[in-house]
Image (cartoon, rainbow, N blue to C red; front, side, top):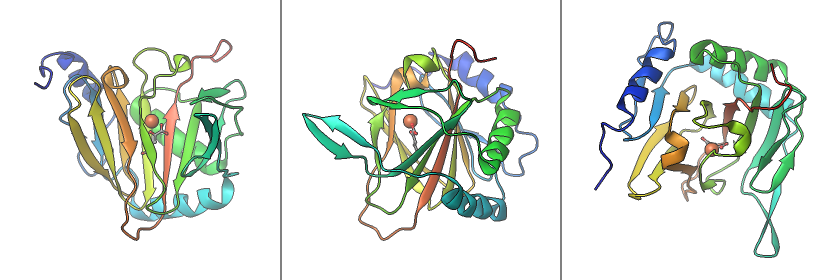
Length: 223
Ligand SMILES: O=C(O)CCC(=O)C(=O)O
Ligand SMILES: [Fe+2]
């Protein structure tokens, strides 16, 4: 049975209220996920701005294909990545330790828009480039200790729309939501405690997608 919708209900409502949605021409919506706080803004960026950001990021970021050690083997991850942030924001993710690259003009611009709407100060961002349908991200929760409890994460989509999968950790119930060009997805509250999320592969011939997930790492000398 899916968990009761009353659990965390206050928190869901307060996230919606917390976000500054007044400036967005298209309405934001809360996704129907019990025990989670997830808001989706379809047209956070206008299409021309989103196109320009996509092109700029392709050229601006030092994209690399990292590898993970699994079962004694080194396996290249199926996407390109680039980690950026304030100097103290070294991040450990699936066994990879990544010192931050500096903020670029485009990342700073998008970060400031996310800060404004989410009323927080993101100090880091993971950029993911899914080059085609065979690039993906396996189901995971963004629950690294340096994110602290109940982290707020702002996730921008540029380029090809891809289905974003949520899977409840206990009930295993799945919910899929297509993330469109120029959209913003905000995950907050207990979302990471109760759900995994990821991007599946597809055999369809599709174009590339760049995703930016802004985070606030709790590091000793962050202000
Ligand atoms: O590409 C996406 O939308 C998901 C990215 C993600 O989950 C992450 O970077 O932790
Ligand atoms: Fe994630």
